[in-house]
Image (tube, rainbow, N blue to C red):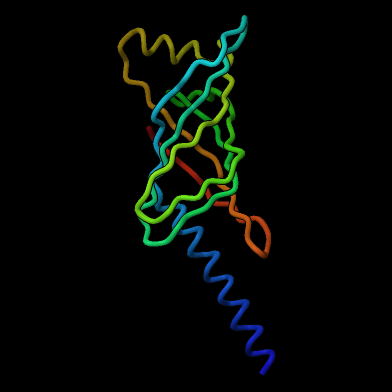
Length: 144
């Protein structure tokens, strides 16, 4: 009897963790603002502001995220979201992320913008959910 209860509890936890990961993947994440924090001789410190909308019928929580930003397929840098974000069902939250970009990395992208060419923006990375069994990674990929 104890074995049956243990297996039921274990399988129930795994199902909840899988649901949480699937719910996070269904969230709509968009970049809504880029703020200049400071300008240096070789780089700029920015603050990227994301909107995360949860279309699910369950709450979504992620503990942290890290990502890479690309402009016209050129790597521009690495960013992270270090605070836990809870998003209730059918709700949105905004979250800020520090981001440092080297001027040498944005040259081609800036030139494309000045010439009026369409610049494609892409973010790839991972969100992390802490579970009783350890940390779970959920891949992120955004085309902006």
